[in-house]
Structures are given as C-alpha cells and as structure tokens.
Length: 387
Image (cartoon, rainbow, N blue to C red; front, side, top):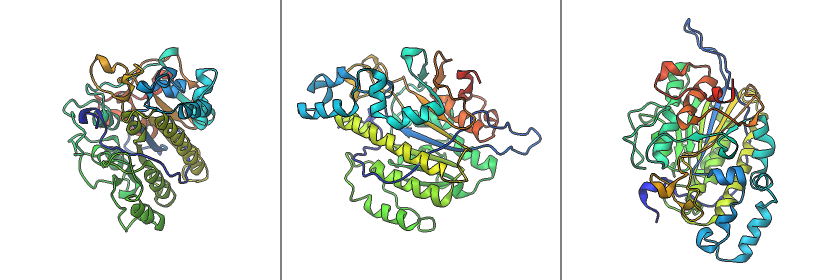
C-alpha cells in the first residue's frame, strides 16, 4: 500500500459506464448588487479528478513512462502495444486528443484551459502537503490551511464556497450538493455535517431524495469491486450525479472522482490511461445532459481541475507530495467552460494562477462577491486571461 500521507482517502477502481452530460459556463457573471439584492448568476458545477498529471493532460502518452516495465508496471508488450494504438500519435497534440477526444475537441475550444507550462501557463498548488485533503480544502475554501496534514475524513472549521453560496443565495438543502467516491469529499466540502446534500463513499441515498435508479446504484455499489476499500467506483458516483442533476436540479454541484490516483499509485500506467479516457466520456455525457436541460443550458459554469500534480520523473510519477523527489506535484491545471467565458482554448502566456483561485471563480460565476466571503482567498481566475 502507498504511504498513507501521499494517497487520497479514496482508492477507487474500475468503471462501468453509465449516462450523462455537461455544462456551459460564466466567468464575467453579473456583479452582486451593493444595495443588498444578489444578481442571478449562473449555476456552477465543479469537477475534480484526483491526481491527473499535467504530462498526460497536455501531452498524451508519456513515452518515458511507457518505455520500461519498471516505470509503467505493464508486464506484457501486447498491453503496451494496445495502449499506444489507442492513445498514441505522432505528436503530443494528437496523443492527448486520442486520450481525451471530447475534452480537446469540444470543451477546451469553448472556454479556457490553464496549466501548460511548456507554452507559458502556470497553475500551482499553494498548500505544503501536495496530497489530497489539503488540495481539496484549498480548492473549496479559497486558501491553503496548513493544519490539514492527513486524509482523515473530518470536518475542518473552514467554511467552503459551497456553504457560503447556500446562505448568501438562500438555497435549499438539495440545491447545493457534493457527490463523490470517497467519504472525505463530504467532510471537506463543508465545515459542519448535514448543511446540504452529500452522497459520498459507500453511503446510500436518503430515501427522501432517492430515485429508483439512485436506490439501485446504492445497492450495487457494494458489488462493484474497487481497487482500494476506502471508496467506491467512480462509475457509481457518475451515475448518482446524473440522476441527481436530472431530478433535483442543484444550483451548485461538486462531483469528485478518484480513480486516476488509484491506478497511478498502483503503477498501472495502462489502466491509468484507460481511466483518463473513461473520464473524458463522463465529461461528454455530462455536457450532453446539461445542454438538454433548460435549467442548465447556456447558464452553467463548468470548472474542472485536480487536487495535486504528480512528479515529472518517469519512475516517481506514481507518488506525489512534498520533497525534491516529487517535483511536479505542485503543478496542476484548470479548465473553465461556458457561454460568457472567452473561447480562448489553451491560454498562454498567462498570468500565474493558484489552486486557491478556484473558489472565488465559482462565487463570481454565481453572482457573489468573493471578498464578502473571505478577503484572504485567491482572486477569480479571469484576470489570468485578460478579462
């Protein structure tokens, strides 16, 4: 098992594909009225995918990793050949498009993507630990909290942008929601329990809110083997998210996936790449669903990011954390898509951005002034691309 301090609470595994679709976005949402009434901003859907490395997102297959069994963990040449045939290409641009076709051909051109250091865009984690819980708390609260030093699934006394938005906008219990594969996603997204809807880990859905399909997913989640026992398959999380969107129509939704980190820690580069391809299919179905719903089409901000990076080193890529051997763990990426986001695609050169800027970006999209929540938090990301 990997060192506990270096791995996310969820150890999730294999996917069984379900059905879903995605979102439009807004960065320059209407500013809140200083007279008191808050302007109606967009919906916000935040998606995190644990430890998806910049190398694969921006470059597709890393041939240095794939070059040896020691680095990749792939024992059979036939499997390496399969991976190259599926996700390879004569350039990094072609390989990344084969790995994540929907992301690169449909989502990125509709918004902005930051983090490709090779062309002058830098996104950094600012917490000291460079593993999961500190990363998620930084994303959700808008600043690093240096007392978060483990992946223990506990509530910290730091309100998230989600609970602030619920109060500021007068939203109901089901209008804000976290759905994730590890139970820690619920505790990190709010400072106190039961402030809004959560379904994480192997938790069943409360019968008051469960559709027939949600109930079925809650039953079969124990039958779908996951790579690690701390969390369920992302396929269940994805299915729950689809049903929740269709039936309860939240204003703020956080969907948290984890299998990228699981396969990486296991040093299974083939399955790590396969999962990234599956994640791309989730984005496609999420986008399609949102475009089919009047409540979300052309009025939804989609923010996609990760909690930490991974080492650049082709042998050490499986881990992450503080220390020179894990150099690269601080480098992440952020994508923002939507109707009022400029269609810039990969933005470079760009002003540096940090993980702490995600929360303010979400609040701005909701029509809220992030400074009224926490003046210490990072600013909205729009400044990085000249907005």
